[in-house]
Length: 301
Ligand code: SF4
Image (cartoon, rainbow, N blue to C red; front, top):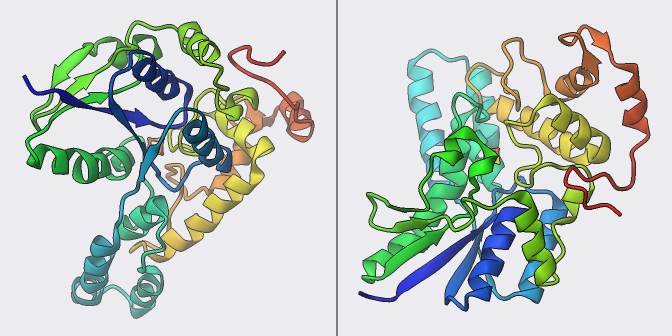
């Protein structure tokens, strides 16, 4: 059987870093790939650079939506007019239907909306498809056998606990999940063994590293992000204004909302208790008094 090309899918989080270290430790030839969503924290970009200096080269890929946005421009100019959409809305949409080079923003401008827990197209558009089109497909066309290493652990969720360690995909490559039975302690022990620091965001209270914020962020996570990284919330607030212009209904909220609540409204809600009816005084005070180090994983000394 042909030697496989091992592809390590890196996110800048603890699990994928441990995954990469495992491949490195086993002396398995591999390619490490980071799919940039355009919605990562600056410290994650810096961490990816750090890993590259300490461990080895990282291939960076990102989705490009310029073709979809060009098609959407045509669609807006023809179909929206045929549907009787107002000229104001059409002109608004055309004013922002240009690629910016930021994959997350461009995806939302193309779709005229943000992803949501019910329509979670972001993972496919920003990670799965760029990996397949830019990394796997060219190798498959060369006749290579691919093993896609993924840093998934059973303990993370019920869905993940049912995933097998190895699996063949219909697209013709194999998925390998060597961390499936690892604990979070095993993951950080792997970092320590190779003298690699975990992503600094874990010491700043983040439970997970990925989009900042993720559309699935819970109340507490949003609270923590907003008090530590208000600039990230402000960036999303600006994106809401842009995506709103690309939307036929002239509205767009980063977190799904039936009454058009914007991200700063959700931040205010994150400070409340009793179903959002009452301000939580403890949280309100904590919002102003941010501890320097607070890790959910006991990483702070
Ligand atoms: S981290 Fe969240 S927002 Fe980012 S691609 Fe995944 S599901 Fe979407």
